[in-house]
Length: 455
Ligand SMILES: C[S@@+](CC[C@H](N)C(=O)[O-])C[C@H]1O[C@@H](n2cnc3c(N)ncnc32)[C@H](O)[C@@H]1O
Image (cartoon, rainbow, N blue to C red; front, side):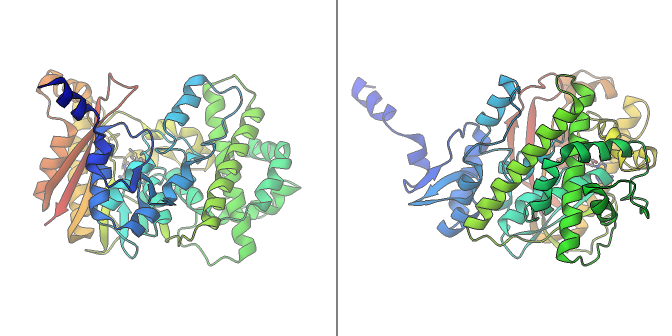
C-alpha cells in the first residue's frame, strides 16, 4: 500500500461510514456493544423516533434528542467531599447512567439505563406496547419505558424493590413543593425517621395515631398508600403527601445504607446531602419534561414471583430482565436494613429468592437452574408470539466451577445455560452481544445481552 492510500484510509471517520452525517452520535460512545445498538437504532427508527427515543444519538439535523437534553448539564449533584473516582465515574457515564430518576438509589446490579433504552428500541417496542421486567430490582426498565411513552409492568419479590421502583416513577411527575419544604426542615425529618428504625413501618401496619408533630405528622398517614397492592384513586393532595413521604423515606434509607458503610460524614449530613441530590435530579428531569413534549406512559410496579407471574397468557409485547447472577449477590442481606425498616420478614422471602435457595454451592446451583427454567417458561407464556425477550446476564465461571467441582475453563457460562433452557420453552436466540465489566474482574468479566424470539 502506498503512503498516499494509507493517508486516504486514515482520513476516514468510522462514524461517518456507519451513520448519515445529519445523525450525530452522543459523545463517549466507546464500547462495541454501544456502537452495535446505535447501528440498529439508526436502521430501525425514523428521524422523529430518534429525536424522541434514541439512546445513542445526540442530534438529528438541527434538533437535539431528548436523551441528550436529559443528560446534559451537571450530571449529578455529588456531595463536595466525593472522591475523584466517583466524580469521574459520573462524568464518564454522563449519557449512560444517573440521568432522570435513575440516580435516586444506587441499587447493586442495576442496568445502565441508556443500554435499556437502546434495547427497547432494537426490540421494536413503540408507544402502545407493554414491556415486562419480571425481576425489576430498582425499576430501570420501568423508568425508561415510561419516559419513552411505552407501557410497562415490573415485578419483584422484594417489597423494597417495589417501593424503590414506584418512588422513582412517581418522582418523574410529583409536585416538589413539600419536598423542598422538608429539605428546609431536614433535622426534623431525619429525627422522625430515626425514631422509626426497628418499629413496624406505618406503610405496613397502618398507623392510627401519628407519633410526631410538625411536617412528618402531616405526612405519616400518607405512608399507608405505599405498600397497598391495589392503590386507591388518590386526590392531588393525597398523592403529593404520599409521593413526598416516599421520596424522603427513600433518601433516608439510602443515607442509612451509606452510614453503615462509611463514617466520613455524620448520618445527618449524609441524609441532607442525599436529599439535596434527590431534589436536584428530580427537578432537573421535571424541567426537561416540561420543556419538551413527552407523553409519559403508565408503569406498574408489583410485588410477585417471576416463577409464577400473575399475568394473562400472551399479554406483553416484550420482556427485558436481568436475573440474579446465580449466587453472586445476596440481595436480602444487602437490603436487610431497608427491608427491616419496612417491616418485612426477610426469611419469608428468602425461600423464594432465585439464586439464594439451598445451602451448599452445588445445591444452590441446581436450584438456580430449576428456578430459571420456571421463569423462562412463564416468560414464554406471557409474551406474544414473534416478540422478543432480552436477558442480560454476567458470567461467573469461577463460582460455577466451584459449585460443580470443575475448572472454570470447562464451565458453560450462564448465558449459554439460559439460552439452552430458553429453547425448551419456544425461544430462539436471534442476537447475542456482550460488554466488558470493569471493576469486578475476579467474579464477573463479561455481561451478555441475549435477544430471544418467542416462536
Ligand atoms: C439483578 S437484579 C435486577 C436489577 C434490575 N435490572 C435493575 O436495573 O435494578 C435481580 C432481581 O431479581 C429479584 N428476584 C429474585 N428472585 C425473584 C423471584 N422469585 N421473583 C421475582 N424477583 C426475584 C431480586 O430481588 C433482584 O431485585
